[in-house]
Length: 488
Image (cartoon, rainbow, N blue to C red; front, side, top):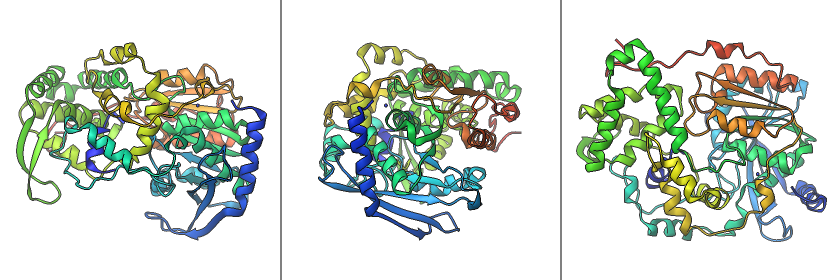
């Protein structure tokens, strides 16, 4: 994803008849003969892993029709003698490519990889699986571009780049691909871990192929029942918790006694007119324009709310902007200058067809009634979705998932996009689940060693209701940077 689309989409950023299931399984068995698997090395991983491709139908209702190649990798277990059921990792987005996250998963999921192979599949439309990316002829730098600059023509230009049948690049077909990989690799069952949108994919997997799943981990849940795209209220909740935590922290409250008022003042100033400055490019050192609008300020702050590491910077960034010093904000933009690793064509294709049609005018209005970003998180969908090619989603897609599979649900209390209420929504209908809310976590609980410990124990016991959660109490409360040179 190039910088222009990064700026637009910094938003915050599921039954078949027995006959249809039989057709899916027949297709998958035929796919064994077109499996390619070899030893390889992936960027950021020193040890040898396995890389593969699998030819699958673009349209599963036309198994002899057009084929696409699905890219995947297997991170082998350190102790293969245990031969435990593998774990398939389902990436977020929608629009992240799992194989591109291999180095991060290799490191973060190290404890799990001791005894479980980890399977990474690039969802169709991402990575090397027929990617749907919005490439631009001219890439403008992240410092001057603002979300308000986007035009309908740019979205039309993006759509014009795609070949194939966009209606086939949906969540259900992605899961048919994932299960085809499972069958081709010879696994009777797998465990699955989904994070963020990956939880939506996992819920679709539970719906379509429940007998293929040994256990499920849903981390930072995007339920079937809650459309992606309404992040106004959840972002405001996360931001207000940050304000409360700063106020309760003696050093933060001392440094920023009027933080909420500082924020309100900056927003009011940017609503009058964007800030325009000449700055030294943080990476190149050359002179460049820096433009900061209200929407750009809000979207960049929202991105920091995802992580406990970056939330610590938010009060400093707000206060310095209030004082007229935008260098800390420039620093935040520099941190994400390379992009967010999203294949925006797939992001828009899925959200505009599977989620946007379910959001009513009243829902948008209610979500916009908040004291953080108002309707800012809706802007990309409201611009792009009316122009995006349409495909029909069956009513079955939206049915709540009721599969009786051991399921661990994880939520971070400080999460700006998938709050604990999302986890509660899925927990209502899953008969064998346990929902853990981590008080001092934001987005993706398994990003912490404690979260991984809990997931690893669950994969061993397959009992979500009898896990050692004591390490969560040891996670530190939010702390904040109180000076430009660090805490004093």
